Amino acid sequence: MVSKWKSVLALCMVLVLTSAFSPVLGKERVNMEFKQAPLVDVFQILGQLGGYNVLVDPSVSGQVSFVLNDLPVEEALDLVTRTTGFRYKLMGNTLIIASEARLKSEFGTEDFTFVSVENVDVKQASHLVSIVAPSVKSYVDEELNLVVLYGLTSDLAVAEKALKQYDRQALSGVPVPSSVATSPIPEKGMIQHTMAVRYADGAAVLELARGRLPQREFSWDEVTRQLTAWTTDQEWVELKALVQSNDLPKFTLKGILSSADQMMVLVEHRAQTTLMKPGDTLEGWTLTSISSGAAEFTQDNRTFDVRIGR
Figure 1 (tube, one colour):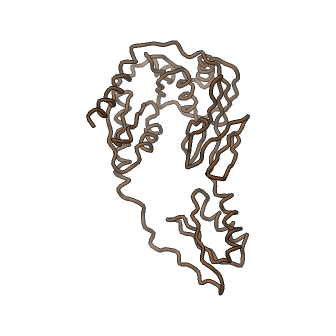
Figure 2: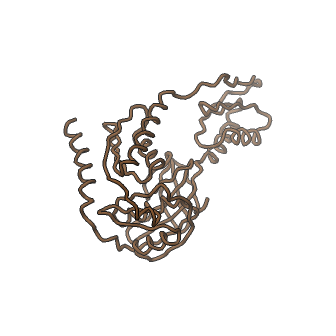
């Protein structure tokens, strides 16, 4: 355990010490296509391609749509910042994005802090940081259930407060509904079947089921997300296949980026964006391939495509 803490502390020292160096912004040439993508995510991607830690000022907001082909990262970054009214500045190994006025003002000192979480997944806690304090970098230690934060002192306070409140909120658990739907009285000869629905809206699931088998009765439990029906075995096989084909996460493809040695996509789901490369998993679905304007996701024997902007 002692060696584990030493490794975490060593990481923090590396983050601090790298500010003493100023590498040249990456010259790798990239192709990019974004459709209504969050500007913060676009800057994060460009900075990472250049090999930098990225700090985005909280004042940076909005969405962008553009297509850029065969450009160096530096030129792409310059175009995006200027056309959106922002500027960037290099401070050691950190790329800072903000308004010109903000860059001219004093940012304050950078520091790091440790936040231990007990009731939430440490990766979800880190993702929360990227939302409430996008300029703060975070490192997660799953064994210690620890989040290490690095950034401006004022931003660290915001991120730490949000993480602690998020962790306390998880103690309340899942609320129990005041009433639970009762199963309908089955017709003679019918068999009760139950299926978990992970992604689809409950009302849409009921409408789909009733449209296929209007003569049968169905019930939906919002807490357990279970669909219950009294049907014949054959009816259930057909209904289950229909529901599963529509039980897909609502991924929106916000951007596609390719360079000489990699391809990535920016995916939005439940108001959160995630940068993914082939082999990465989101909500249990694995990104298997990226093509022109589309990405393919697979789970078990199921596959679906998402096109950019959808």
